[in-house]
Image (tube, rainbow, N blue to C red):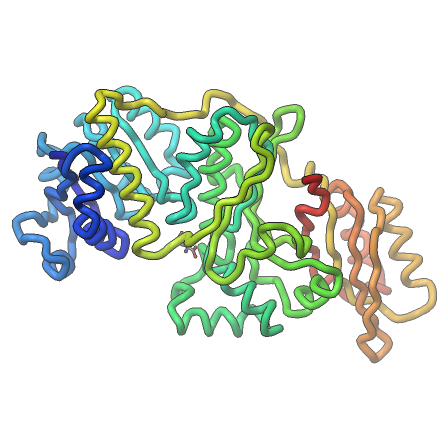
Length: 431
Ligand code: HSE
């Protein structure tokens, strides 16, 4: 029998209790042993009895799990960095294997946790920390291990994908859709981590560390959220054949330098990620052997996340049964340079309000040209009262050149406002 110490009996914790019970027989046959929840660390005494757990299984004292020699696997579902970091570290030092769904912890303390796992010869699995139920961590570490991966692009946050999808369908503004999403429970009361891109940033830090074999932490990720996206941007983008998504992007150039960023981006309508709508997540990967692949599914929610946690528990159980533990450790054996956002080369959408007078377009194009910013498309939209709105798409240019040119434009009296600048992605796919 494999005994589990479950830390946290909230949404996902309850999900894992239910799943291990519902599919007990097939899980036992697939893993080679019965998997039993032995103790649960949970502050709320009401939660666990509702799930049919016996009162004597519940504890408020971490030491009851840490010091229980019969517990083989600790499943950490409490979230946040402390006390999760302390609990996971201590569990590993006691020779216990660990499954965690905690992206905050792994995106910041991954290196320390892998070191501790290796020193103590235990397994550390964390499939549920990225994109909930979608298998991506383990496939990247195992099924795609023969590839040089040069691109991982994810829609890794369901809340923002829901909001942007609804803004696109209904031509509504961000604040309106956010309020509605909060009422329906699709967005948190404090939506900062989702709408400012931090949740996605943690997840892409984890994925890029695996993809590029180099430790990328949250601080390495350039982050912009979706709060400045307007219905107008979405409408103009649609006219030009693009859809907006909050993308988490990790790329490696031919010199082995990497860029890791989260920001809203326009994707061509025919890009596979453009069809990922509502609260769904997807991860698009390009490997040198496999080419393009995309993993799609539910990135959050009780049972999808429990599905990923259960997969990890089963895999560790198989490892224990076959005396084959600590097979897949930290894959970060290199130290790669993370490029600054200024070194990015991309195409950009720019929307600005300008005076509607002869020579204005030429003056603006002149400033952009002086900074090596070449235009691919220009749309002029009348605004009335002598103002016009310009929507421009650039060719591929350096972010630094674009930023320098915008500083000059901001100081010109013919430019009333630079309303938005949005990066484009996936415009030059060859497959
Ligand atoms: N808040 C996240 C989302 C799920 O909206 O996708 C947990 O990471």
